[in-house]
Image (cartoon, rainbow, N blue to C red; front, side, top):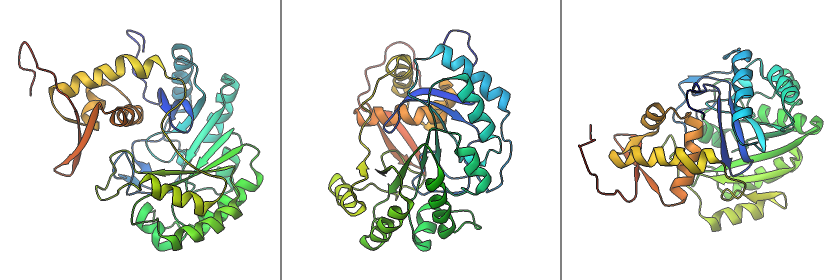
Length: 324
């Protein structure tokens, strides 16, 4: 970010993404406005559980920030609608995708929990190049346990809409399955899922597990061997999401990481502490912290029901006491 530039509210990154390379994020709903309250969510508990579509943020504000970010940042591999909740809840999503594609030749991706792929939402998403929906369960009981959906949502309707969407979408669909140990990884559930995903027919099935601090501490990861077993059940299109292997950016490798380390050298902090102290968008911050945890630079721990981060090696402090 250039000196004197105003901090973005709606655009974050580019950040290294294990699925999308270098991704410039577009956040179009307020923090944790979502139709789910997933037990594994890295952004914490859902504070506004809803299925109502609204213009949560102004289109003009988003596009202005995006234009500036494209000028100031390394060229991303994707412009990605994701962010602080479920992006399809924004009723102006289709308009924004159309205008972004006129603004830039960078392909447009949308991450969605697939909960609201009804006809008008499908029409919006058909304008994108890549859709990354999630499907973590196919039976109602498991769905309610892992995703904790809005009371009006049923997994059978979500599956039906996914089938329709994939049948008519002209772009690519990469279906993510987030696996939580002991919750949605039973052989019975996975066998049912394999049959249904075959009917949905996405281009890829991407297997993920809990790698960042979840909203519920008991949500834990599968081992690599367990992921390999799931991959075998779900078939040839399934792949395990690995570490980031694409281009890195100055945004990630330079000042941002140094700022986080310097802050954590003084005291452990929550994600909210770091975000507010350094002016880093929460979604961007989750990427940095995830990479730094995997690289052995920081670790997370739970205290008083909150997730804190600390550096693994704290150098000796000199000068005045910075503790508060």
